[in-house]
Length: 166
Image (tube, rainbow, N blue to C red):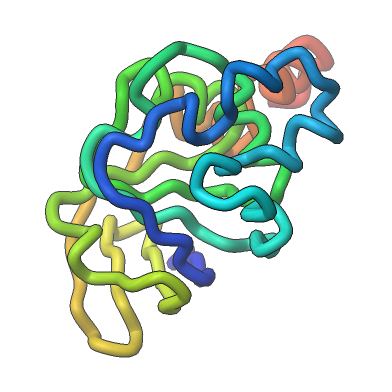
């Protein structure tokens, strides 16, 4: 069983890509761009993120423009999982392509507060708040999306295939 544990970073509904990475900073190199992640929420938000934190959000996470930087910068800060009630289609695709595991589960946002611990059973499709024992289900990814995520993203998978080591 593959269980992922982390600290919840909580967001509400309709978190758009301008909130994740404001358009005015997209020209910056990644090292600097990542210091502006969620800056509309808090100017120094990036400093509060720890490797292994997990975003938990409501509906329509990642809506807005299709900018890949909104996923890449989050990953660059050490976030590997985004758990939400629903996600914008293009943001979902960017997550898969860049190796960030997107999890969508009805009612998940109501189970967690900022800073709670979260446990995700990737094999059985279960998200649990260990403090309250509240849980919800999700459909684990399989097939090509899972292969891409297991490789760390589309580019690492292509490199594996090109070198004959898939």
